[in-house]
Each structure stands twice: as C-alpha cells, then as structure tokens.
Amino acid sequence: MTETRHAYEGLRAWVEARTGLSLTPDRRASVDLVIAGAMARAGLGEDVQEYRRRLEADDDLLDDLLAELTVGETYFFREPAQFQFLRHTVLPEIRRRKEGDHVLRAWSAGCASGEEAYSLAILFLEEGVADHCRLLATDLSRAMLRKARRGLYGAWSLRGEGAEAARPYLKPQGTHYAVAEHVRRLVTWDCLNLARDVYPSPATGVWGMDLILCRNVLIYFDRETVRRVARRLYDALAAGGWLLTASTDPPLAEDAPLETVVSDQGVFYRRGPRPASRPIRRGGEPTPEAAAPAEPTPAEAPPEPRPPAMPEPWPRASGTLPSPLGADWSETALRIRALANEDVAEAERACAAATEQHPLASELHYLRAVLLVDLGRDEEAIQAARRAIYLDRSLAIVHFTLGSLLERRGDRAGAWRAYRNVRDLCRAGSAEEIVRLTDGVPAGRLAGAAEARLAQLETAREACR
Ligand SMILES: C[S@@+](CC[C@H](N)C(=O)[O-])C[C@H]1O[C@@H](n2cnc3c(N)ncnc32)[C@H](O)[C@@H]1O
Image (cartoon, rainbow, N blue to C red; front, side):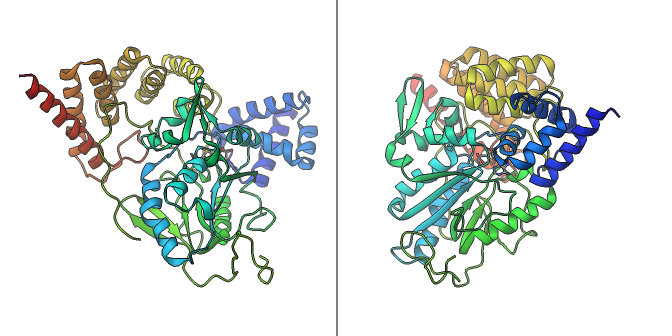
C-alpha cells in the first residue's frame, strides 16, 4: 500500500468516526475523489495529512467536505401522504392538546434547499397556525442553506405529485418561482450537523419541538450514529411531539423510546404525552425557571392528466453514499436527481449519457423521461418511457407517465392502453404495496387514478359517437 493510499484510508476512517457518515468500502474510489476535490479547493494539492489537520481545527472546512459526500435532493410536498397526515391528524391533535396561545415549534432537520420547510410553512398558513409558530430549518450544507434562504426555485422543485399545493405561494420570476414573502418570513435557517452532540439546546434553538421532520437524512449514517441521532431527536421533542422520517429511512422504534403510529399515510413516531417538564411560554423560549390520531385522510382526487409524481426511485440502502462516478447506475441516478435540483437541462444531458453507459437500466430511462417532460420535450419523453417499458413491462408508474403524455398529445387509444396496463399491474397484487419507483404511492391509489382516467376517456369516446 502506498503512503498516499494509507493516508486516504486514515482520513476516511477519521471522517467516519467524527461524523457518523457511512463510507462503505464499495464507495472508496468515489469518496477519495470527493476528498481529492475538496483538498484541491482548499489549495492543498496531495497533502492529506495537512488537510486532516485543518479539518480537525476548522468545522467549516469539515462541513464543506460532508456536504460533498451527501446529496441534497428534495422538492415541494415530498411524500404528500405525510403532509396529509400532518394536516388531518397531527395539527388537530396538537391543537386539541395545547392551549390557545401555544407556540407550535417545528423543525425541518436536514432541510437541503428548503422546499420541505417552505411546504411546512404553507401548511401552517393554510391551517391557521402560522401566527403562532416557530419553524426552524437546519442543514449541514451552507450552500444548500444559501439556496433555501433565497427561496428561488426551478420547475424541478415542483416535480412531486403534491407540489401543486405550493403553486399559489410561488411567484413566477423569469424561468423560476419565488416563494412569497409571507411564507419566507415564517422560516428560520441555521447550520447544524445532526451527527454532533450539540442539541437539544437553547443555543441551537432545538428543544421542545412539537414536530420534527427528519427525512432522507438518516440514510447517510452508520447504524450507531442513527441510534444516537434518534435518541437526540427524541430528546428534542416536547411531550406528545411528533417525528416524521421518510418511508425509505431506517426504522427508529428500537433506538429511542418513541411510540410508533401506523396509519394509512405511513409510519410516524411520537414522544409519549406525559406532562411537559419544561413549561413553554408564548414566544417559544423556555421559561426562566425551566431554562431549558384523528379522522382518516379523505381519498385524494385522481391526478390531472399530466405526468405524475417524480418518483422516489431505486431503493437506497441504509448507510450507502451516492458516487460522483458512473460505476453504479443507481448512484448515478441519485447524482442526476440532485443535479436536476440545480439545472434540469444539465441533468438530462447527464442522464442521456448514463443511459448509454447503462442501456439496460430501465429506471434511468424513466428518470430521463421525467426530466424531458420537465423540459417540455414530450416526444422524446415518450420515447424514453417506451424504452423503460420495453426493458421492464412491470413498471406501472412508467405506464402511467406514458398514458399522461399520450393523452396530452391527443392519442386517446394509446393513453387508454397505457392506463389499462397500470390498472392491471396495480390490481394484480396487494393494494397497499408501494408502486416501484414512486414516492410511496400505494398500488391501490395508482390503480384508482388509472381507472378514473380510463372512465374519462370512455366518456369522451361516448360523447364523440
Ligand atoms: C436528501 S436531502 C433531504 C432533504 C429533505 N429533508 C427531504 O426529505 O426532501 C439530505 C440532506 O441532508 C443533509 N445532511 C447530510 N448529513 C447531515 C448531517 N450530518 N447533519 C445535517 N444535515 C445533513 C444534506 O446536506 C442534504 O441537504
């Protein structure tokens, strides 16, 4: 082993120990590339030892490296079923339990470029709790936080099936959308490394939370760090407070004394509703002395004839890292999706190259189709969706996307066939099963949406006779 390789190995081990990130051996090459890039930016050439000394002394430098090792992919109202649960279950429950002037304390932990926090702010406005809320959003990446504070997004941030809910609060600005001032005002942004033992604490503003969203972040941590973060999230909750993780995140029930609430909208966690040990006064600060399920969600209306949600594609194993290389297509896809947050056209070009490198990866063809839709290139999107289906006929969501595109193009017969395929595929198994490549959409719901489209196409055909 050369000296340099040895130095890299030592640095990787140190980063893992310090941050809890899981830099598994199969990611070694890509992690080393990221490290080399970060050293070059710091003007250190190949001097790994010196870089490590600086990392030990400079938290900002370390945070910058960590931000490179994780991916900030996100969009408005991601996993919309969870927002339904917040609207119909969590907020009414907190209202019932707390006094009228209670300040609702909420935290988007690992907020990336801010879409999640703004989605919460919108929800709070619509549910009439915005006047009495403290909404904190934190991330490790300062670059992400800068973007979040700007509140300016491309159409790509609106790709989820729930994202329409954000539109009334966005003002078109050239090719982008600016978050309305009254929404922006509701969110406080800060830099916080969840793996560090600095919270809950008044200094970080993280304490006594009624609601924490920590979604798609725990996947970056090793098992031990997940355990420690879960415990700290629990400690940061007020009595009776709610914790939401993403459907793809590791389960936490064994890591902290959280109650698990299973509902039609997913699995949620709660801290037991014992009396609060720290009285909270209006304004949301601890008092000086302290210093320190309801109605079921109504069925959703079938989606409009537009390509449906950007999926939450390809399973992401706990503790794996995306690679900047193209060696593994699923990691490449993750990178492309993150890139799309910045520049959809560039992401589409990268995706086209990736499909050449991995021509049999149906998911990549589908991702390309979704990106092409976003760019308004429907005909190419149809071709890409067809290629994905050719490779894997069982991808119901791709049939649905194809149906939507064909319907938009006026090809009713083609759309009808595509929706029929969706219905047949989704009705073949359990209604609860999550449709592959989707953001937690159950088969029954997608089947219902396809049936609604089929019925509408039938009605239109009858009317033409
Ligand atoms: C995939 S994004 C999740 C965004 C949002 N929560 C969502 O679900 O859409 C993951 C974010 O976690 C952040 N992150 C990764 N490790 C972190 C850590 N140790 N502390 C805080 N944030 C971290 C990354 O910077 C990135 O912005």
